[in-house]
Image 1: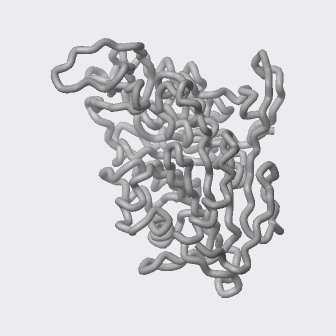
Image 2: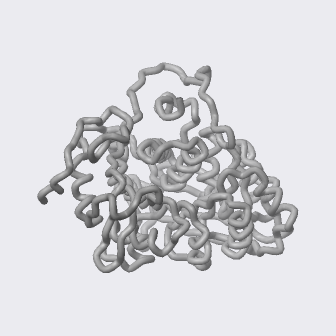
Image 3: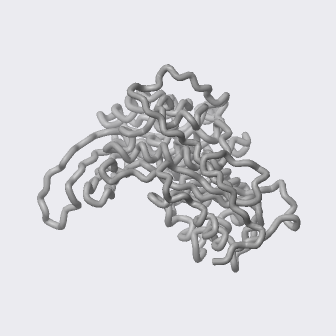
Length: 405
């Protein structure tokens, strides 16, 4: 594909973004470090406002790793077994807490042994459970997860908790207290009626909202209308917009959701794509590009020899999606860490780990070209252990040091 005439490519693989670069800029904040001990003595400043609120699922995960996924009627044995906390919000807030944020959670469990273990595990990681509702009687939510060691995939079988959370479970005073001082509110689109109540109040208080758009769910469209940021699974943008490609779907999302500042779609081992809206430029003074073509140009600038996460960004341009419309913004490609197959244990919760890192990055005002490799590096850590939380890195992890200074 011929390149647009004005594009030139500086070599900046190990340099942060510089505004005056003529076109694409690459970023890799990671520097290999060799250390035989943890970096607990390293002093790294934290964001001024570290309070984040998460609304959604907190569960117990029963993880069974097997040599390969069973056929019907098979009887097989596990290679390893683990019981640990799960749920999108529970996992993402654990990720954020280990990075140094001060999370609060709104969710619901029962007063059974599973509910108690959910609460104890969240509190052990420093998550404020004051706003978590504990029902008398009922059953706490749980998930059976089969981890296939051969294909590095997992199959989840979820049982929702009962009784379900309803808006009346959250008093007005608790709602206001939960939002007090929050930098951002995150929703996984479970508990949708209660989530909508929280989102409406957060919007009234001008608190930014991040939505985890894993797939179409009841109440999702109403919540997306409040979104400042959206992180999507691979298939969601096209499923929701019916656009012919992921880049054109991202353009459609920004056009349909006027409050949206950026949208990220995660692509597993292929990394992630971000479309960031720009409102500072005069549209007729910047160049226009077809968004699918621009993504192919950006992909061509990836350095395949680098194993750690990096990012490549376009400048602010007009991004056109045929038959959909045009937005002003930047298109960014983030790469994933190339994890040796021998080190991959379980991908459960990798997306939640990524979102936890995004929450931290937003609180720390990280630029997008740094946010993407940072979040990918945190997600990669999650994949090196069984379960959604075992491998989540702490902010003292030397691999994260160059991002957190």
